[in-house]
Length: 457
Image: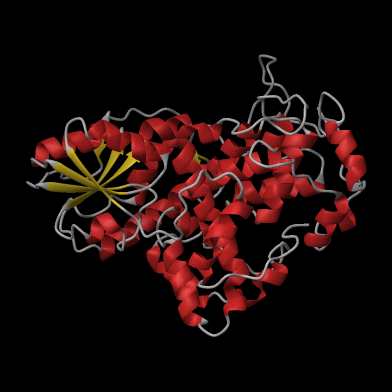
């Protein structure tokens, strides 16, 4: 197999087992820039502003492609403004929501790894647990709405944004679990799971990055889900109260009101030795021996090269700046095995990324491409040493593992970080989206929008 061809999926699945939750399955979301462009060109945001909070309303589902850099937020904005040049209101709310992604990336760039710690003190005094309850992990809380959300998360890798907020509020405020546990669960299973939007959103719900905690009641869930769960629900609903009552229940005491499952849903029986049977919706994977830094090419020859382009998992586009600037350089993608062993991804996430790699490699003019598994610093250093390269190119991204890898590589190599197109310039500390939007809306929309008295009910 030449070095510019990806190995078979079977071989990749075998090597990825220690980094994977569950088994590969059919009907996963297709990845790749080609699919991202198809979806973007087919999308009409005209109803988005009126319907975006309803679970059954059409949404773009572009976020997984944005997360992995298959398309950029700038491309989405330019496409919509070009497609609807005389109907600015048609795209305004969609572009405002797109700006949330840019805002959260600026939060990540500002705070770095601290984004996984409380950015502010919570606006309540309720104790939180650092353990994810087993009934949540099993999707067996006894609440049809919550279990329905968990089933969709585990099986499809998708949750509507409104459902994400509901589940986050349930886990944090009704169950008293620290937001970091929920953020990790989402990162592992969501196609678009990333640290910027995910951690920031969970902190917004918890009130460690907002002026007050977010929570919902039964009416809110029933209305925006069109009664999907509520119409047939027969359990005692912890959300069935008005907002003042719920606020007192949730934040008037020292502990969350629901420390245990809502109803007695039997979990799995104990194992033969008497210990609880601890299983998640997906089985744990066995450890397989892998080399510290191994290419998956069956003929791992390395061609001489003065420059390498490191493609990370947020830069899977042949329009990526580092790739565009180096059409003849050797290209390498490294699966960060140590990081992903510590926090494995669901199999459908891997299928999506591997689709993206297939699509990327098929469209690159670069003659030599490599896929390695291991520690990125070790793999990139080894490939540079074997090829004789003195310069490593990479596209800018605020993800800590990208930033830190570049910092370490600079001790030995010349590292060129290529800037990405910017949706909006904003140099202040990003603390509140409303302040950010007031400043950047003209950059993103091309005009100053009319003020709205209230954005979210």
